[in-house]
Length: 549
Image 1: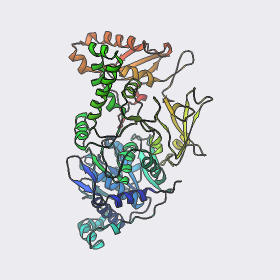
Image 2: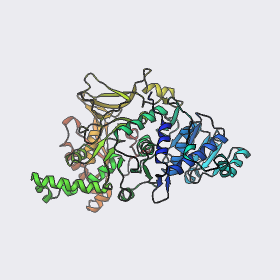
Image 3: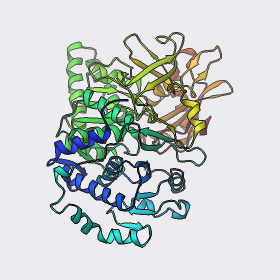
Image 4: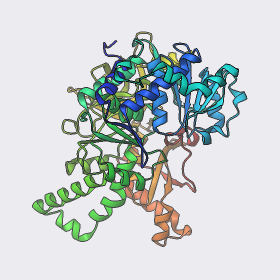
């Protein structure tokens, strides 16, 4: 257990930043650290009046926003447990998870609360609108009276206004539970990852020591805060450092993200691979394939000049002010990675999972080895369950401060992944070289056993298919011991090219043959199945693979 605590980090961030900008909703009012601290104190006053006990659960349903962040900070600094739920979950799943979590208080955005039936989570006594902190449901007359007198009670508690000297939070030890993070909403498959204060503090501490941000720097938050990746590194880390965070409150389209980057010019960018892969696929590949460009790229001096131009152009797309772009949450396309590495673009690829809050490995862009996802963080041990960890892929096992306490009210699922001695089974396959660089091969449950006993990782085949300009996304499965690729084509692009529906199968067959030429013989696909609609996805936008096996 580390000596630094999450609450200390939060208090120090507020103290250092006191009069500077802390949080903003995009295109709206800026809040200073002092104003955030005042609103946290107001919610603490409500928790005390409601007699919320340490360890009790507070559910939080909403999109990224200043108010979402205030509730999160107020809850963990009070000693209660925050239960952030992805707004993309279906209403019936949200209801199930609120009930499953044993939450007694609920903060919810008005539009997300409307389809919910409060009778499905009767243990919740108080429900508050996240939009403006007004009550939807109160715990009896006394609860209703509190909300009517909230302003007066706060003024009575802090007659001179909330000052820096009032900034004091209870000493919450790192062994206490901080967050229950649900990875799935489906009834009967609820895995609420229990993350302690120690896990979150370990993630924040590593970021403070290794990620390139300084107090006062600006950052744009567009990853879902209810997911640990965005929460840890677009919110908790920069907040505790004294940075200015702007939340894109609506579902971020590429246009909105690009516009926000240009205006805010963030110093650190966190992203999922999809964003940068789209730039590579839609903007870079077409220009590099032009006949004149192909000829110029054969001349070393001109090639280097062109790479510098491309680098600068992409750099400006992300605001032109960042020190590093950190990619995580899914595998990065190898072809795109080679290109961005070739032009010396300042990106790195990290590795993590919700069960580690989330970080497992990271290396700065100028020290990371190509195709690796960094080296283990200093609060974790990592080993590969393989007879030859450098050359033969095995399951990645981790142990240490970042690792979860288990799944909430699900001992069976906990026992499946967490050994009594603390080793966590990630379910990911990888290798690790002598310098501890980790290389992910795929998910163990996705691996296909080839006809001659070869291990086939579908993610590697999918990465090649996904590079094709007529493919939006692919999924590789085994059917009757043969490899089949499910393809969701880019129908808009097909229409632009004048390709008719009756020609589609021939086009896909050409893509299959073209892809097979780039793959080892045992990895080649037998046929393609064309998807008429996009794949079914989780709220985190991952394909629900189990639906297609």
